[in-house]
Length: 416
Ligand code: NIG
Ligand code: FE
Image (cartoon, rainbow, N blue to C red; front, side):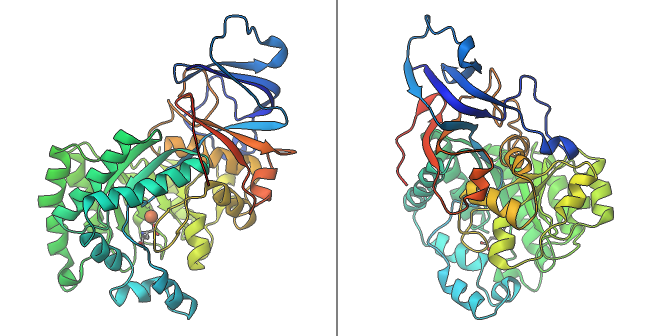
């Protein structure tokens, strides 16, 4: 059915001919139209403008009156691990008592703990648990999401995760991109000889993932205590043979060289980036790789914040994502991610809006389809509750302000 949203107080992030991404000074400029309408036809944005320009006589569909309320393009959350089994609040207790993320991981907790839980969970139950999280993030305004494997760490369990992601793609209205992250952690039995595990990733997992076309991207956790630059390079070379572009975890725990190796392999994005210096910024400036920050993880783990202002001043684009996962960011709330971007990282409201919409879309290769209010793009938007300005969204960090959700031009029944 076609949908016409009328009397919109402000239509946010409008772009007739959007660039692939928004970078540097342009991040602080945001185009809006006050007293607007938005027309979505057969799932795609057909037209928008000021109310007085609306020629309504040939409209035949559902009309929504958005008086006092704003319309945003749906959030594009380009980095999550939302397919997982159970939860890890026992480690949360350990963390509160003073253990670091790396100490918990070294004791066999962390990612390996989630891998054990996932192994003992049926594929159907894993799907049901993940579906509940998808429904949750739809209510929170997300219209596109990337989901990684990486809690399998065996051929069989990695494929199980990727099949669950594929099933979510087929059965939910959000746009989903899937990423193979076999190199998320080194299983305990390979601790003494991690290259043996890399052999399995390269020789056994990747060929199957490629053959069954189960992933759109490849990821490696390239950081101190996890995978080295040399191992990352080897995995990314192998992945290239299957047409898998990298989106990698880099520089969360140290100046790991992850950003540089990602850029060398023409990564779509490099993510985390708490440890970003001049050399890393220079490498990113020469690339088409989206620097993606995950303020939920930095907040939850008490990490240093990345030097965002320096990165924007240098002319880089920035995407923000939730990192929704059981260990370092157990939330997929992109509105709260906007708040963390502004409060913790000192980004402006305009900057966090671009970073959670159009730049997130680029980080998933979806910039032609999503991320801005543009004719021809997919009709994924949300309507807010009555709010005074768009800056109220990140400012009112604890309020639930999303009133109605439209995906593929269809109003969603959503309950938070
Ligand atoms: O992005 N840094 C690596 N991976 C995840 C955490 C996964 C987990 O602890 O379960 C992250 O923070
Ligand atoms: Fe992550």
